[in-house]
Image 1 (tube, one colour):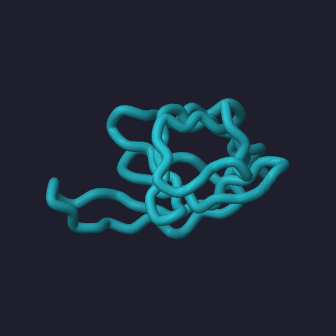
Image 2 (image 1 turned 90 degrees about the vertical axis):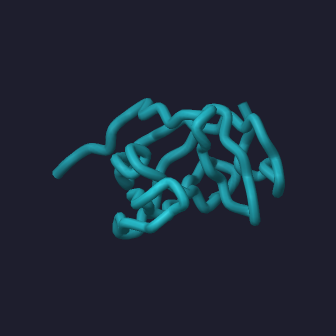
Image 3 (image 1 turned 45 degrees about the vertical axis):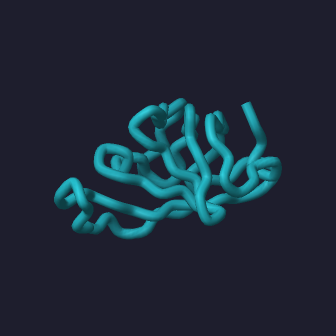
Length: 96
């Protein structure tokens, strides 16, 4: 497990936990694989924040959720989870 402050550019195999503190509106983008849901989010832990790219089913996470990224990677200073990685929701945000 790594802390956000220790995440650098062009890293692979990242496991990190944090709280989703921002999330854009979900959009449909055309990709080479066809249309896909996409949202940009911000993940935060006690050491910092990082932009997180959410694709397809990953867009179901909500602001306030505490999540773990497993086998993530960075490109252009942003964190992503490819087909080899996953996002686990450790604790859902409280509603209301």
